Image: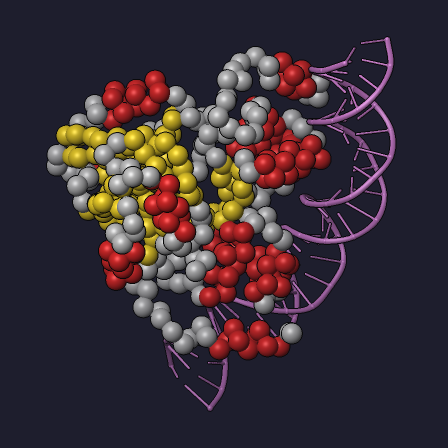
Length: 173
Length: 173
DNA sequence: GCCCACATGTGCGGATTTCGCAGTTCTGAG
DNA sequence: CTCAGAACTGCGAAATCCGCACATGTGGGC
């Protein structure tokens, strides 16, 4: 079980599509994928254990992980349940904009209560997720701060009632 | 710089709000909060370093982290940029349902392409985030699988054009 | 007030893991 | 064919993790 994984690894990185154009970082072979999957299960798993799982030495895993972090391909972080940490109101806000989306998106991005900003194709130009402590806080953010932004034509809010699923398992498929 | 932080810690856990009612896990004093913040910056930061930052011994930090993980208050994981990992189409889907929301939400939760499911108050009953490899895949999930679910009256899709912000910094405020 | 149970924190070794580095293998360009 | 760069391995030293025995502290029950 030493030689085979080497050959299997060298066998495939070429094979398929490098048609990944848009991105800065080149691709991501299956070994790095496997490493990421390991760290998605447990971000603190020792390099040696990961190495055993993916067929690489401890040092090699360490180098790859370091590079993935440096390149910004992944980050290893603690994620929490907002409710437990004291944020009891969350909402998704759909925003419609007159003119250029960028300045509005940037303004939303700059707000600490905004966790998530994405420009979309559809009946909203921008979707933003808001995390707040309570109703007053939420109202303040939506009504006073977001709707006051220049260029914002209208907003529609979806207050969260119950979070059913929240995973971080991209790449595990 | 050894005695003071101890006193500062014992000074406050009592003081303020324990008015946190709704949740299963009561808690979370400011020390655990501080630990979480440390791990949100770097999920692999050594316990000793965290201890120095929050004023606790290495062993105490280790115990607290373990408990936070066991209780499900937080998890330490690798998170990735979906685009880099080969998922080039994402969308938020708003769903409207006839009757009980639960079965539909559960069905969505069961789909591996669905990252995120939340029941909301507003013009959609459920919001679900979809992560796919390409347009065909996305079309398949939305048109064939989601709209086919019993109880689903209508859906509206917001295809992601550009992700502007994505943080995991709850508690850091 | 007293005592006990339980939760939390501290201080150790010893086992593991991380880290840096030198040497080897592989691959692609010229 | 040769050379340069990238990636992998092996290894010793330093740092970290882990389990455990021993304080400390808080809240009942009596």
